[in-house]
Length: 317
Image (cartoon, rainbow, N blue to C red; front, side, top):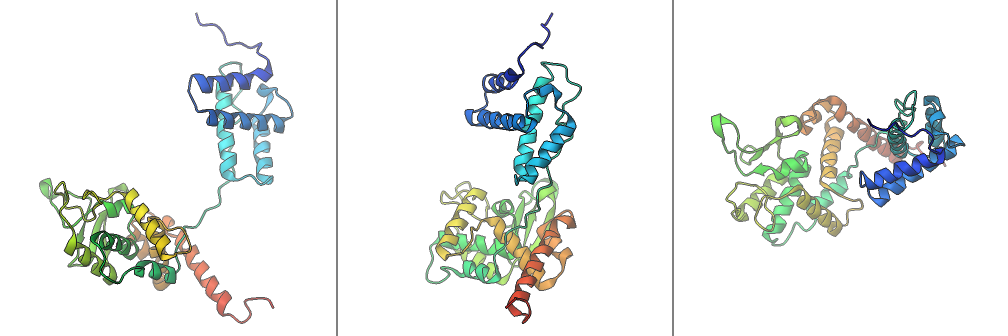
């Protein structure tokens, strides 16, 4: 018969035993165990005692509110609540608890962060940087990728999965996740939830794509991948990200640029010009209009900036 859990353990020893098990049995890193230790010390400080089984659901809610009032972020509070909850799950196996006091306690809602978007001028400057002269094939590949990301608002995974042409699998099912139809000026991509959509390709992007296709070498595996790495294999999202970052630094773009910034810029600039939220939703491949509505906030930021610059009574003297 298994031995009953120890109940005569000193209250001060419970965290030490718990942290010891995290380190030895679950083999968590020293850094992670140290973070749990700090969280439990903070809980003891908030409680003013070490009688862990006495803490209630109301106490934990009050502590979370106090942390929030003290300026701690919702993310930090959520992490601490998770650590406290794990400790009490363990403690309930050592002593009899009426309930886990952390269960049901939620961190404050995190403020909704708006996606970052380039200004129209910065986007144009980024696209046109180093666009003259006689570029090498790798530069033509990069230019075509960046123009397509901004022109069509693709996710980087959608871009990387594109083939040069439609390829048919069994029973007429497409063999690829996406393909370019340069003559029609559109790409077909498979996005989240395996939803397929057609997206127009702008004139500048079509020109850049034609220039790349004219010099594109055969892929080593014989695939129809539209964009290739230096090893002539299908490009990966990580390589696209690194190339775009380096290009933006050379172009002197004032903010950090990654592929999703170009997707956000596409949506924001299109909405500023058209005001058609439903069309932007379709082009982005969002299943719900709620995901697209964040761009209305970006649009208002643009309008507010125009107001601040132009209205004679916008600024105080």
